[in-house]
Image (cartoon, rainbow, N blue to C red):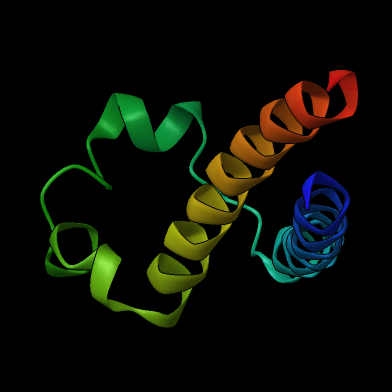
Length: 83
């Protein structure tokens, strides 16, 4: 029974790894630099306030969720491998 659980968690872990790699590579690089911070250009416009609803915001949220799943599954696998 424990071997089946190990294999299922391992397959899910590999899938999460592939998804995390894909999401991290398609994510756009944030171009906000020091000049925008000093001038306040990115502080209070409509796009910055609604950034989470855009495609980039959704990809970033999915990347964070995949990263959290990656860590949780890594810990679960390490515990299961000891058993």
